[in-house]
Image 1: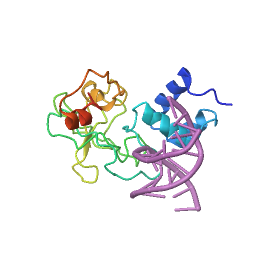
Image 2 (image 1 turned 45 degrees about the horizontal axis):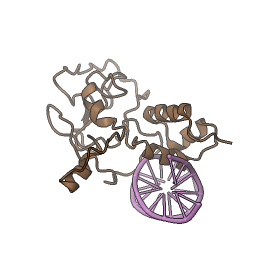
Image 3 (image 1 turned 45 degrees about the vertical axis):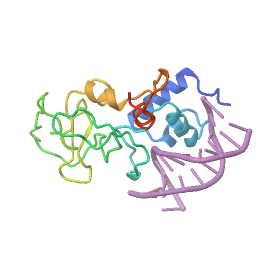
Image 4 (image 1 turned 90 degrees about the vertical axis):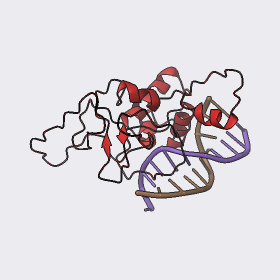
Length: 179
DNA sequence: CCCTGATTCGC
DNA sequence: GCGAATCAGG
């Protein structure tokens, strides 16, 4: 029934996943020939785990199951990690009258909140999502939902040519995921 | 019980 | 590489 993971199917998978579609929704969108488990498995094999736009229903936990460690070079402070965030998807919240968008300066990151975050603003999480201090980068999103800088750390295609052997095994092993 | 993604492990 | 089973949480 299902032709396996063809180029276009993988492409659709990547697109939908980065759009924030849930694994089950993607599975259904792909024709039902695959289950959500298959989708998740493929996503992980592609090195696409973790994304800015979570799913609609209840979010998953914040288990440190996927240590991406490296904090992006944020001007202000180091975000915990590109883990999932509570709600980045734009939604027709309450009629926020004339929210005077903070207009994040290109130099300043972390000024956009979930309410002020525009469609084309970098959705890189800054700080702890559970606190009121939580915000988003907010700079111009050019690569997907991130700015150029954060896109580099966010989208890690698992590209790691085995460049011989690395001396520091532990460190190298933890680093090669995002190098 | 519905959902979510994460991980394991036989194939 | 693939994905069902399982896990862990909301």
